[in-house]
Amino acid sequence: MNAHGKIKNTLDNSFNISNKVCVVTGGTGVLGGTIAEHLLKNNAKVVILGSNQERLDQKVNDLLEISNHVLGFVCDVLNKSQVEDTCDKILEKWKKVDVLLNAAGGNMPGATIAEDQNIFDIKLDDFKKVSDLNLNGTLIPSLVFGKIMVENGKGVIINYSSMAAFKIITRVVGYSASKAAVTNLTEWMATEFALKFGDKLRVNAIAPGFFIGNQNRKLLLNEDGSYTERGKKIINNTPMQRFGEAEELNGVIHWLISDAASFVTGAVIPIDGGFNVFSGV
Ligand SMILES: NC(=O)c1ccc[n+]([C@@H]2O[C@H](COP(=O)([O-])OP(=O)(O)OC[C@H]3O[C@@H](n4cnc5c(N)ncnc54)[C@H](O)[C@@H]3O)[C@@H](O)[C@H]2O)c1
Image (tube, rainbow, N blue to C red; front, side, top):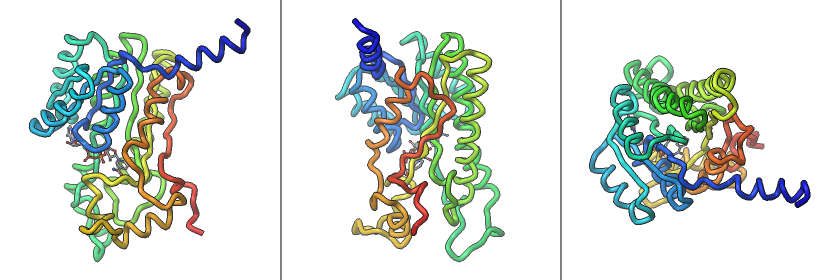
């Protein structure tokens, strides 16, 4: 086999994610649930963490239709000892954790200022809550599962930043600031893990643009499915002229998890139909 052939074979296998144990926080949510399905279809082992038992049971049942390599736990990402207990249970069953997807997160109504309000109307309590969820809700699972990855000598963490961290979205203050913090934390952790623990530990993030989810549906769509005024503005600023489908995150996440991305760390990848690069003109 010539050198060229060798490289080709390496690349072909490098997208294989079979048997990787992948923990998905927010796995009962729209985006977390969608990637969980994709991972199972690609022969990974999947653990979903959610905050509500009923939604968790429902999602685990749905996922069992795809594969029986699935576990689910109710686990508050802000409660470190609960995350540690959950991690112990996963290790008991599957002995390792290869991948952590920090998909738990989101916005809260009080952390967004209303149309007729301004900065001085920010509700500090809600600002703190949303900051806690997005930033500490990413950090705490990374500390718990990251430690196992370090002990195992390899692992991948993928965080969920947002286009709101790249471009200013009016009114959405707490969410945006905390997602910008997630971007920075991703870059910091990538550096820390690689410098201190080696090149087999990688930390990256995706920055989704606008996908219809539980938290933004009412903001973007009217009851009859047409775009709200805000929805229209977003579409006009998206060169692809549409919202994303949750499945459109799968390819990038799959690649980041796989050995095909073995030299990629500290990247925050926009998946946004071009929103980030468009001037609007
Ligand atoms: N949908 C979008 O357009 C979009 C765009 C950019 C970024 N994101 C980010 O992607 C991630 C997933 O978004 P989504 O649209 O699937 O949201 P979602 O609301 O459908 O899912 C979020 C999940 O997080 C869970 N969660 C919330 N607090 C928790 C806690 N303390 N402990 C454990 N779980 C908790 C919720 O139960 C829910 O299942 C979020 O971080 C979100 O900010 C979404």
